[in-house]
Image 1: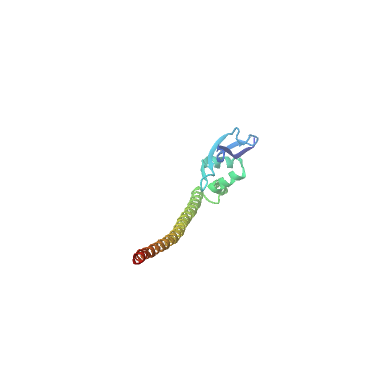
Image 2: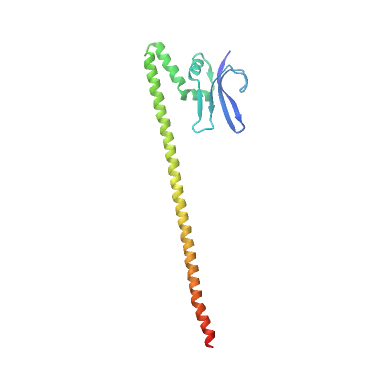
Length: 175
């Protein structure tokens, strides 16, 4: 029996949510499966992956073939790196402790990279908000200037009308 590691679709229309499952290659996408080893939610930013690392590693080692998307997910989670390191242990290149140190260093480096990206995204969002606030302030100042000019013109017109009104009242009285 050829086994596949594939995604099984769930969620509602327009909001896909996937389970990562081990299934017979002949089974339909959302059909029968042998084991569920995790979930994948592409709707979040970044995409959320919940994976049973040990079971995924086991299935990769026994020869289950992942689909392209699942292969990328497993690679990002470090399953293929651990498989590679276990191959090095079997060949005697290094021991389990050294392999675990290499894996932990990779995981820490990856976590730093993710934090750096999240921090840069947050900074970009704050900068965009500041830029939008400045633009809004400029628009509001322009509007306030126009309103002040209209009020000044209306006050000047009222002053002229007030100055003309007494002169108009005095003129008929002399006649």
